[in-house]
Length: 566
Image 1 (cartoon, one colour):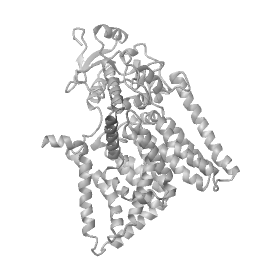
Image 2 (cartoon, helix red, strand yellow):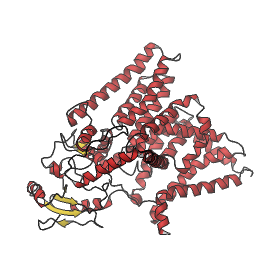
Image 3 (spheres, one colour):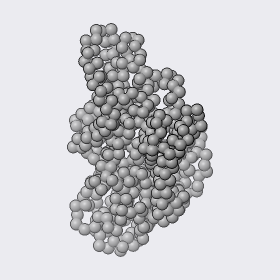
Image 4 (cartoon, one colour):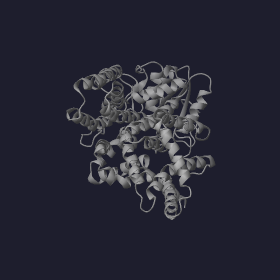
């Protein structure tokens, strides 16, 4: 029985959701012919919903504020997440750099002891990722801790999705879409409860898709600037996926400007092209200046430097892999060898099919799950609507673009989150029109937000009761966080040499440092053996030195002694 539980664990939430949906479906079916005793109450509540939704600005604010308030209220129960994966620590390095008023950091003289993943050490010491999410987390750090930035941007993303939907459909449906996004992506997903760049990217896509219909209806400087700002954020968060997202949008705009319903030439220049050009130019100059400071060239991105220094597997399946460099640390060699093996596996037909299935399953779990698969029942009708060609095209080209990447995580699709929600909400609108059997469509649509709320309540209750229906809260590398708290309570500076066991998980890394290594309370270094460690011990002669094996259970600090073997 225990073995069965562990096999089902990754899908347990989806299974529970299916059970709840089956129960709701049974109730709907059994009550389809019964007298509508509560019709007046339903009409009254839906009228109140519609009146609130028509207050568009208030609706947009309420969605985002609700996410922030509810997740903050859950902190005593769910805690504040700790970073775990490489990307998260790398974003936090960027945040710490920006929060201290720097664009990047000079390379450390002892940098070979601090080499780690998704971080360049030369020509400067910095995260390999574009700067947008680092700026978000830096805002949080200035407010007290980086996760506050994640909290705020995820609330803002849900607000942006509601605002975007208001341009595509009636306000009551836009508000419903914002609430569903808040429940599915905003509260308990890893977009909120980790440090990945997902919410800021989805927000950028929503800005573009929300501004576009407004521009077509009434070109204005404000909407054109919002449209261009979304593109700038995409370029500085997920550049490749941002470009793919932009292609259908740009083609749609060109066709509009060349078509019979194009705006007057003066309006197009003054209210559309000029504001966009100014924002894009300013964004381009700022981006170029950032990369010039970090890599030495305005046209060389940080990930290109990292790829040259460390990378083996190309980003795309049609490219040719590089030979393995001479790594100074075995753990880094193992990580990049894994990437190369995955790349080679993807280039076989069977490997590509298997990987595509895994990508699709992960994407489905994050964006849809059983509940939001329901609106797909109406996709044959949605696909016939000409005005939805743009969101359909965006989702299609994003799927194709992600299929040819060597490694893809679900949030790589995040620029198209807004496009997906346009299609899902339009699907629910079509379901609402299903009247046979009597009232079946409205009943299904009403059940969707109720079941989404039920899943949130169930997960919170399970966390409070310590019922293991998902990974425990808070999330992240809690063992490293506990050791860090222990070291922070000690007097003076601390230096920790990290080593691992023979079966180490390369995704469970401990060697991460702050932007200003020399003035950090705790410095994490790789255990390179007695002779190599000696130079670092001399450099940090005033620090207390420790050793730790990150794979011990639980990991324990041991005072550094030259008598210990590696």
